[in-house]
Image 1 (cartoon, rainbow, N blue to C red):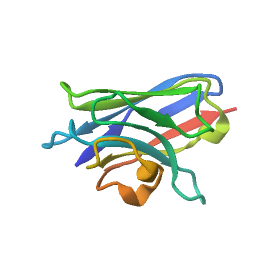
Image 2: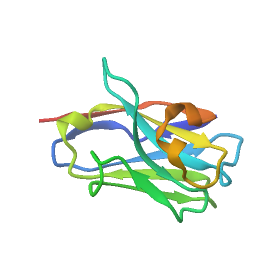
Image 3: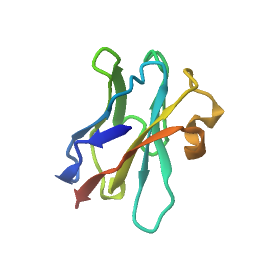
Image 4: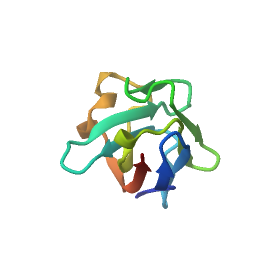
Length: 125
């Protein structure tokens, strides 16, 4: 089971850090992705990181503003979000992919085997 936390209310232009932790399971051998879902919209890919942290990939909409990292010793993955915009408002989910490296399916939600509960990020204008 994965747990995503760190969401909250932030003003436009602000920053927030989300974290994803694994309960009772190590996900150091999994690639991890972040997705988000706004009300009335489909879940969309945000960012992903390979099992070692050596590869990362971002959606165009967040490139240059968000950063993903992982600490396998602590069994956590973080998503640093800066220059936040109202359109970033959504519930953010982390998920684990048993494929260690990133691949074309990395951006597809169905690729991921384990999901955490979402954490809500609200960006006010």
